[in-house]
Length: 113
Length: 112
Image 1 (cartoon, each protein chain N blue to C red):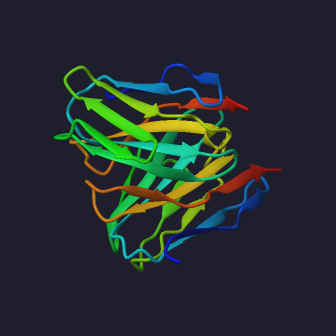
Image 2: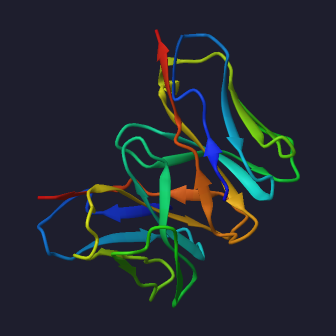
């Protein structure tokens, strides 16, 4: 059974720092991996999608990497801002039962001005 | 604007009642999904549909029902058989399995 883990559960850093969020998964047979942002009481906003054949994706200050063989992905946020404060979730799309996304529990990020 | 609309935002259910959460998308996506989110837990899949008039159970389908009569609509009914329905419900859609999945703003359901 695929399990997705995000560590740490919460992270607080001062504004301007570069930071890395971690996501690990137990089964490397994945279709793709997606990173999301969730603000309190809101739905999820898609940040980046990495297909299993890709190593990384970039969007603005965000860079996501994927190492399928080791079962790990990282989300790098450059020059963090208070507006980046949110919960960040990763999810893997399984090859078996390809419609199913398995989510991690998220990392709650706080950027202090 | 294109997107996914969920309604109502807040809903209260009495014991023994069935309630229906609406999800409408104008993105022309084939696949639609319902997830449940509980505090401290990740999202769990309730039902999904890859095409009109077809849907499959997810991990926690017991006590829920869905229909997919139109491409743009995928309503979720929380039945009285669902013993612990208080949660945040999220609807999502995607072009297909390998594509980005997009979420609505969610619906809060509380049992009173």
